[in-house]
Image (tube, rainbow, N blue to C red; front, top):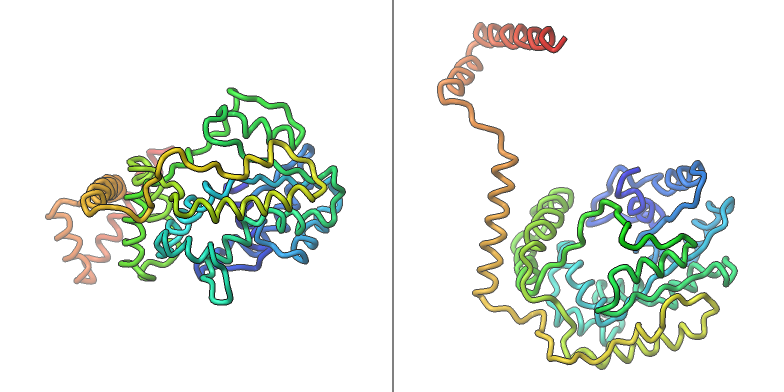
Length: 345
């Protein structure tokens, strides 16, 4: 199974393009995933954040495809003070250009003209709505809400909670899924990428941007040399905490199994004054840009084929101009290929 199979399945259910690009692996991905799950003899975990975006009818249809199984819903939730900067950074990695200040202004006062990224944020982060969407066809004992522990908790605490939700033994320090670390960019790197997005516009198609910018530049290069970490500014704390308290109040009325503590979803006031994510200096951006250029040069070195000697390049150009030489070159290459096959035997 591809590592992107569950992403493709979620996109298939939504019948959605991503960045106006339709991956050929998306159509039919949900049925393929269901078929693989049904063929498996043990328990199966199907998980992707994009499942939170589905509306009630699509979720109902998806559950109907799983009617042969005992389905449990497990929803994980993290406090909004951490979600807001994390989602903004992820948006920037997906070619968006809103500054953090613009993003939080849209989030704090949604209305008829609200930016679509703010609407998308609340559609995915409104945990009561997500539970209501998916839990309508499930008995309460099969609906589980896992709260993400606060900073400073034991490294395996979240895994222990998730293990409890899905009914497996926690394997703690022995857990090794072979996954790459989920690196985060710092303030300077995120702002540099935002400015790069403004400069690029749509000049790179999404598949090229996905590989070169999102996966390589943002994750492998900028994530490896992160500057000051992103955090919610003090000016945004009060409205975020108010929204979190309303959400927790609604969750207390839901009939589901809570694993963790709902109070963990209400952010504490920061002990220090966090730096605003838009607050970067030209020097910091220049340092981040130097690291990015160095990483790109190393990548180019590793992915550029070696140059042929000048005499060979000249001979190839001459052979391409004359029919007799082209024919002679084809015969040479054919003989060379046959000798290679013979030697390999």
